[in-house]
Length: 601
Image (tube, rainbow, N blue to C red):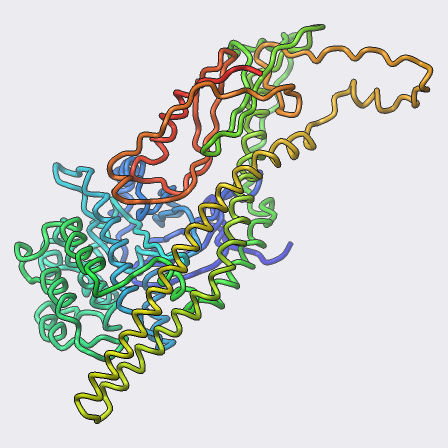
């Protein structure tokens, strides 16, 4: 066995990412007897002085919140656990960095967050908090209550994700622990420090505190009385200039000492922020944020990729807890053959839909009767087929995207570097002692060059987006062909086939016997390689996108699997992959696929 890892319940602790005032954050693997099921972020609430009982008491409600709150900027796949009295929260891992680690890294590297990127991160966080407002807790809109950098991750591809909905208020007990209280207070509103109650306007204050730190590389003072002077003297870490007036106005209202003077909610904060983002003074893009993350964490990202490949292959047997031995039971009679119950009536086959659908179908046959599959065998056969197709389709799309993005990435990096160089020249020219006319002329020329580079960059990004969409379309077609080939190659040989292959070669003079027709019985799922003619779509249904999805302008792929009966109707649909899980996007696709109609092959 290679490296020995520690475990926490059903999780293998692969790597400790962070130790902070909340406890520990790990990259971990959730496992069972079959191996590692998924990689997760595992947050242990084990800081000194943490009230484990209070945190545990919130888990029941937090589970309900997690089931209902599905949004792009909110942690997905959230589960809650307790092991030896230590409470923990797990959620789906994505290649990302904790925001608190980002703050440490920019100080260590002397590489401040550019203004555009800081504003874009805040938009992602405000959107995540806004998603929670549609739910109610205690008769009021759901608030997070503890928006701390340790509860936020920024993905390597430029997204921001919030975790901890439902448990935030229980973490306010840390304010009673002198060892950590000073590190927690800067992110909490003055009234929250007093009443220990979560609220929408308290979340707005936390947004302002994080934005201030992104811009200045320094936290607000823990003492509320000292925050106003610190805010007034705040200087941008990126260019050592005063905070621009438009951003200053956003911060002033977010960090107001009295709740009634703040934005009413994170959604209200986001409306004002959007005016800045898209008003012309700033040009934030997800690509530039991803590029910043790559530059700041490049060595970490490369090492993580290597580590994760090894972690996926870890032998879990040494970490399994021994199962209790069963008491031997003396036989009392002859066992009766098990009877299969609950068979699915009619012929059916798995149908995978990749947007435009990859069709697989069951067909009718006649001949000698064969043993009927049990319900368990049908389920196992179906699950294996689902997994093969899901892995194949995902791999094809990822490969296509990597190929296309690599073509333009280098050019965009060079363009971004030229913009930064020009901005530095502009700042240098403003500091030099030259005539006003020369200064104005130099400034205008540099600004013209910067705008030209930005326009070129926008065109390149548009080209990348077109390439990405084309790559998805190509991958869909290729997945359809390869799914057929790989599934056919993986078809297990029946005893009849094996016996036939063992026979000696028949001479040309001897007539070959007519092969017996393939027999298909009711309740039997048929592999696509056995189908003579694939089913044809005779009725499609357009996807009716929710209004929220249209406004969000999200793009991505949804892969679903549908079970179709012998009459051509879709009887069930399962989402295998969704690039966007919020805004009702997967549900809209599912509803549309359920209305498809097919002509049997």
